Amino acid sequence: MQILVLVKQVPDTATRIKIDADGKDIQRDGLTWVLNPYDEYAVEEALLLKELHGGTVTVLTLGPAKADEALRSALAMGADEAVRVDGQPADALQAGWALAQAAKALAPDLILCGKQAVDDDQAEVGVLVAEFLNLPQVTVAVSLSVDPAAHSGQAKREVEGGVQQIAFSLPAVVTAQKGLNEPRYPSLPGIMKAKRKEITVQAADLGIAAGVELVRLTPPAPRKAGTLLKDLPGADAGRELIRLLHEDAKAI
Ligand SMILES: Cc1cc2nc3c(=O)[nH]c(=O)nc-3n(C[C@H](O)[C@H](O)[C@H](O)COP(=O)(O)OP(=O)(O)OC[C@H]3O[C@@H](n4cnc5c(N)ncnc54)[C@H](O)[C@@H]3O)c2cc1C
Image 1 (cartoon, rainbow, N blue to C red):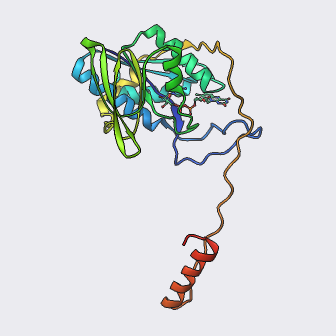
Image 2 (tube, protein in one colour):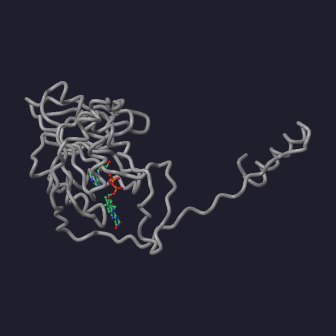
Image 3 (cartoon, helix red, strand yellow):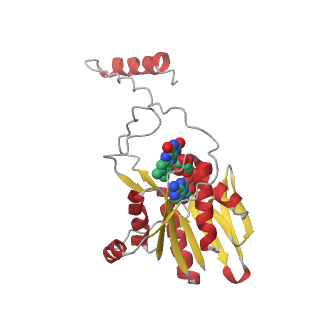
């Protein structure tokens, strides 16, 4: 079974983001970059399916040379092959197109990706890849099984108040939700092996016009300073706290 996993390098959510002078991008230097957390679930699921059914796990990213780090994280977890499509997508449509063209050439039985990337939070790329390749898609999966011989799969999705069970045919695209599995930590030999592994690099096919234009990025408004209740005896502090919650915060 050939499994392809789309992985994206994103800034660590704990890192402090600054916006460029032109307001159109973040300052990319000096950030801590990680493999998108939802993509870790996708990689783990691919490895579990390979352990059950055999085959190959290939990880694919679209981005600059720095994004090789995300590929190496996935290789260290146990992926077999890594491909980087070199390019700068202008929006999710271009990202989905470029990844779909690269995926088509690899002809996988299953494409896994995160349900969303935690930087842009668009949750569009997996869906677009499925549409461009005219494949069935299951989004936000919390469980997955496949029968490669029957070219079919089953997935579960959590919805408000219940669980949907979905049957689909392979090849298909499945986007991973938290809870799908527990991603493994890379082993030391895995990390060493991943450092030496060759990454295939190819030019991105960005042959579709961007659908939207990012106009401006704006940082969130600075938080108001907190209120410290001090020098009040216990009961008065309690009363004052309730008054503040009621009148200022309007929380009760
Ligand atoms: C190098 C680079 C430069 C960019 N420059 C710009 C820019 O100038 N202006 C602008 O508006 N946007 C830019 N973007 C953002 C780009 O448009 C977004 O990647 C795109 O909009 C997808 O949105 P998302 O990341 O929220 O993906 P989502 O749809 O939330 O991602 C869902 C899943 O799709 C997969 N995926 C997403 N992106 C990639 C990827 N690149 N490679 C592999 N898998 C992926 C992952 O599995 C991910 O979990 C850039 C992105 C990159 C990588």
